[in-house]
Amino acid sequence: MVPRKRFPLFFVVVNGLREGRFSISHAFKVREKAEETGAHIIAMSTLMSTTMDGMKEVIDMLKKQGKRHKYKVMVGGGAISQAFANAIGADGYAPDANAAVRKAKELMEGYSYDL
Image 1 (cartoon, one colour):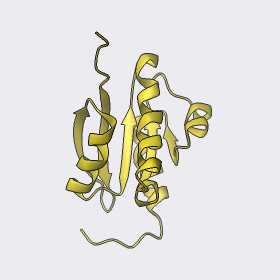
Image 2 (cartoon, one colour):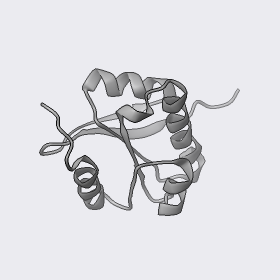
Image 3 (spheres, rainbow, N blue to C red):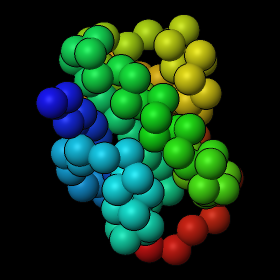
């Protein structure tokens, strides 16, 4: 039996950055949770290279469902690099939490939303 993948991630709704932390074991549930919480950004983080493929799965699933345009996708964590983020089509990369906040604000510049 193949162990289920876990996608440690958090959703950020930018305007003073409101976030919720979730650990989701299936890529398709990521979009459901994003819609449920009103997220504008899906941010995923991992410290292990074994879960990096899950990040690409989330982006590919969003594309397949025609929902990729609805969310900015950020990745980061100890196992992640800017090159990896570029390769999987993420909108942003951050090496740490402080950089993630700056990148989220940058990605949301000029975006009109109502919290």
